[in-house]
Image (cartoon, rainbow, N blue to C red; front, top):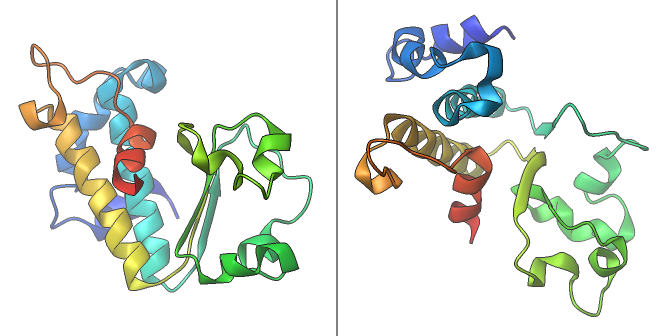
Length: 173
């Protein structure tokens, strides 16, 4: 689905092509280097995820630097015995945990008990109203952040250090 189709489907919202033009008008050559531009890219990501969820499609999304050694669907759908409870989850998300021994430890529930950020590099959303509501709230927070109001942490009119991952972490903690 092309990005312009995501915009067209949201033409009545603040996130229309016109509404996002200021957000995406940041330095397009280096969106990662632009807090506002990167947040705008996050808005597009949330719009795309919402569109797929509304069509009744589960969404498995991963960064381009992610490599899958096996098909992840048996795990995310809970068809592997030790991950059976995943079948009940609306959202599955990776962590920035780099200690595979600690992450696999049943004794301490892995890295979830440590102050490690949850990572948007791999996420799975189950197609249901709870997921749609969650992603919509994530989108709204990103849109607010791109405008840099004081409640978004603006200092001297600049929002720094926040992105889709930081905002998602605030929502799930």
